[in-house]
Amino acid sequence: MTDTFSRPLPLDSIGPGGLELTVEASPSHCAALAARMQIPAVLALSCRFRLSAGPGETVHARGHLRARVLQTCVVSLDPFESAIEEAFAVRFVPEGEESDDLDPEAEEDEIPYQGATLDLGETAAEQLALALDPYPRRPGASLPATAADTSPPAFAALAALQRRH
Image (cartoon, rainbow, N blue to C red; front, side, top):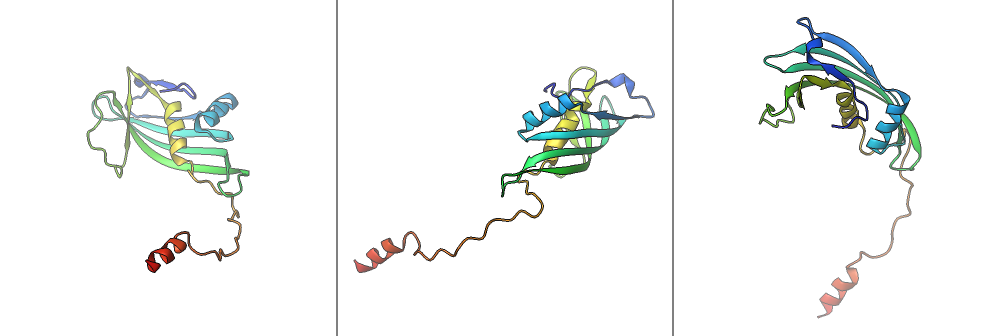
């Protein structure tokens, strides 16, 4: 875990009726998150959580992430701003009690925690990282048109030599 955007929450603050709260990144946290995610900028990040106690020491969380980021277009290499909005569900479990079932289609991802504290800031940061497009393309960006290559295929000369023998 990293403290790029830490928002610790004691488990005992989640009452029987659950807890709803929002975490927001400060400008300095946004700068640290941008460096961590290797993008030009995180302009804004907020995440609303609805937490409820599960069986044992598990905690279920439904979240709604909103962010504005500056990314670099893979086509033009120009920076551009994009908005991210994602709903997600996670289940916090005590470290060492993670499920052996690594089903990527599971409704909730598991996040292990230590002690009696959840880190909602780190959870929001991880959800942002998952939501980022790995190949961002600025709206309207397209690859430049290239002239048709009229040269023979690379191995055409070798094939011609082989036919002679």
